[in-house]
Amino acid sequence: MTNFFSSDFKLGILGGGQLGKMMLYDTRKYDIQTYVLDPNPNAPCKIGCDYFQLGNLMDYETVYNFGKKVDVLTFEIETVNIKALAQLEKEGKKVYPSAKTLENIQNKGKQKLFYKENGIPTAKFIRFSNKAHLTEGITSNKMKLPFVWKSTQGGYDGKGVSIVKSGADLAKLPDVECIIEELVDYKNELAVIVARNPQGEIKTYPVVEMEFHPEANQVEYVICPARIDSKIADEAIKVAKKVSKAFEHVGILAVEMFLTKNDKILVNEVAPRPHNSGHYSIEASYTNQFEQHIRAILDLPLGDTESKLGGIMVNLVGIEGHSGDVLYKNIEEIMKMKGVTPHIYGKKQTRPFRKMGHVTIVHEDINEARKIAEKVKKTIKVISK
Ligand code: ADP
Image (cartoon, rainbow, N blue to C red):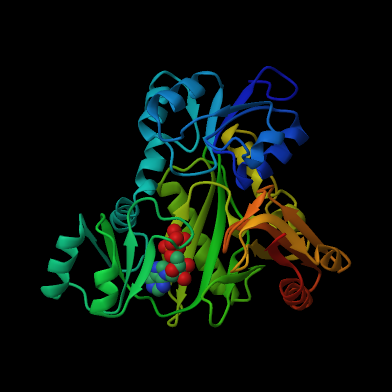
């Protein structure tokens, strides 16, 4: 049995953004040594790790050589060099989630195919290798407008996703490998965070609900527990566990789902790492998702996923028309409110829609938390100086 605590053991993390930074709060709690690789010299992780290395996460040699220095390797972002991970595994290094799991997830076309092959409910889709094939597919009526277009690679936070309603929308799409998906008429977007360790022990967090802004189509609130029927919640949990087992995933897996108007669960996509929809857990759960990820990848017993209180998370994104040195306007006002904790990621520059932080609101009563969350949202603004 490896001794991880106050020892020479080294955990490597590929990516040094806010997810890594929040993971480091927990490696610090456990006194586990960490090495972080990131291309940005001002990465949020820089202040919290034991050793920081600058480097390209997609470069084979860089990732391979970094991996050689550590005992267990994980990542906080999916766009990393998988070939390097596979080679490290071959040489006996522990990489969690594994290269194979990540390979099935990194390309959205491959991910959708995986659901189909494993009997996991998901929206109908067709894969196209380029725009010419897509146009040909549309003219031959394989998929009717409107539909959802997704680039298979490099999409992040809605950037590689478009709803195509007309020929004009179609003309604007970039020439890349893509999938088109039926437009799901959903009631709700839900997510379930699943933790699984190498022994196959598995635990799920309660189902959360994403509440959208009625016009802007942006997630405004992540609400735990979701305000849905318990039968639907049980079904969502069942599907999420099936997804984690099918991928043989180790660590935290966020399973994003649609609840259709007919109460069917469809898996939209997964993230093989701690996720925005689990940030509420830092204040609201017995074991937060970052600590749980560390427990899972080190094959330690998984912690309790129950909530102590209802939790709501509000993202702090840069407002439109502001770019430059960041200022969190009215942060003192929200700090006066009951159960409110701001998290500031440490990005010095704001840009429109850049994720700069989040705020958690906890309360015994989720409806009260929702009211406070609305006040928080209206009060704090991420602007430039
Ligand atoms: P990203 O990787 O950018 O988060 P997603 O696949 O989650 O991309 O899509 C972003 C958003 O687009 C979803 O949260 C949802 O609101 C909407 N969306 C995605 N796929 C569909 C679909 N098939 N039908 C309806 N809406 C969708």
